[in-house]
Length: 113
Length: 110
Image (cartoon, rainbow over all chains, first blue to last red; front, side, top):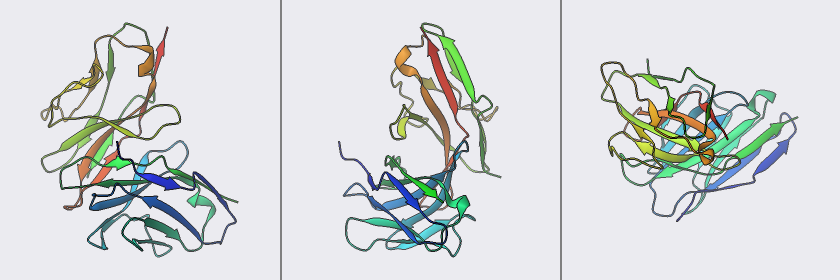
């Protein structure tokens, strides 16, 4: 069964540095998402992406965050200048048509020092 | 406000006992609800969705619009059911974001 893949599984970065989290969605999917889960808290929506543009973003997704689909397969989340509170598990998800369930990747654990 | 509430952080039951994981939601439109499961060190997986009305691994969930609930049930718990369970609501624009509850950790005792 096809899967959403995320790399790296764990990223350690100094505060203030830029970080890029990578995702390869399932190949025929059209909608892409990023979520995050701070340790001990719920999974929170960050951003959705469709037709090469952001469809919706949450309050968390401020100017420090950006997403990109640089080619036909990757979907990236960039945090420009990381803060300690960005430490979390970041999940990528994708789905094909409207109304179909989202499929999640294994997540990337981001640790900001 | 769009919200999903799971009142129990931890639920511990004996193997063979019935299980009910509670979920309540708040949503102004017609809700579409899911249960996701996360086994130890694995990804979030869709367990079931209310529109399909199917039973997966013996679990069922019925949408009760009057009580705004979508409780997850299983008549006889198995040890392999131990996992984190998240109730989720599809919301937002056509791209449809998911709003998750805080999750319930289900622990099945032998």
